[in-house]
Image 1 (cartoon, rainbow, N blue to C red):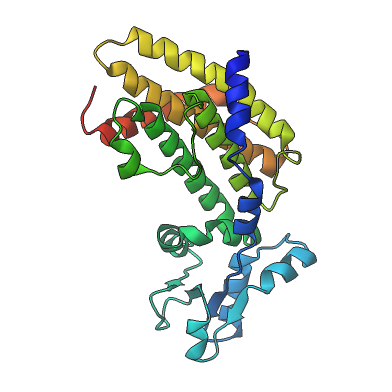
Image 2 (image 1 turned 45 degrees about the vertical axis):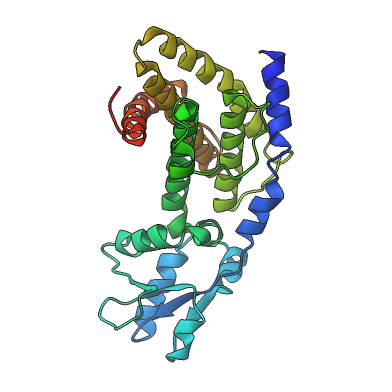
Length: 285
C-alpha cells in the first residue's frame, strides 16, 4: 500500500469532520399528519412507525409528529402526510397505503435538507434516503474522476463539501468522499457516527480504495482516444456505489456484501457509471 497516498488520505481527512454530520442528523423538524378520523391517523402513524420499533425510539420519533387539527398547524410543519381525499397544501404529500412510494418520492425530490434527520427517526424513509445518498456521492465521485480533463464539470455538476488541497490525489479525495458517505449512511440509519465509532468501516474503505485505483489506471491505459476517462469515471462510480451498498448492508444486518455480491453489483454499477460520465461530458467516448 503506497505510503504517500496513505499520507494524502490522512491529510485529506482533516477536512472531514463527523461533527457536521451529527449536527445534520440532529436538525429539528416537524412532520404533520392530516387525517379525517382516528383510523386514518393510525394508518399514517403505522406508516411512519411500523411494528417492531422500540418504545424509546417511537417516543423520540413521536416528538417530531404533529396531528393537524386546524389550518395554522400547516405552517408549523416542514412537510406532512395526508389522506389522499383531503385537501392539503403543497408541502403535504398524499399517502395511499397501497402505493407508499407516492408519498416518499416528492419528499425525496424536494427536501434533501431533511433526508438525514427524517430517515434517522422514521424507518419508512430510511431505505430510499440511503439509496439516494449512495447514488448522489457515487455520481459526485464519477464527476470528480474526470474533472481534471473536463474542469467545467465541477461547477456545473457538483461541489465538494470540503476544501481539497493541491496535495490530494484522486484516490485521497474519492476515499474521503466515501468515508463521508459512511458517516451519512450511519446517520440516516440511526447508528453511531465518527472515526472511532466506525473505524472498521473506514479501514475497509481505505483498503478497497487501492483496488479501485489500480483497476481505474489499468482501464485508462488500455482504452485509447480518451475512452479511458469514461472507464475511470465508471470505476469511481461503481466503486463508491458498491462501498455504499456494503455499508448499508452492514448497518442493517451486521454483515457486508459477499465477494459474489460485490462482483454482481459492481458489474451493474459500471454500466450505469459509464452512462452517467458520458452524459456529464456531453458525448460518448
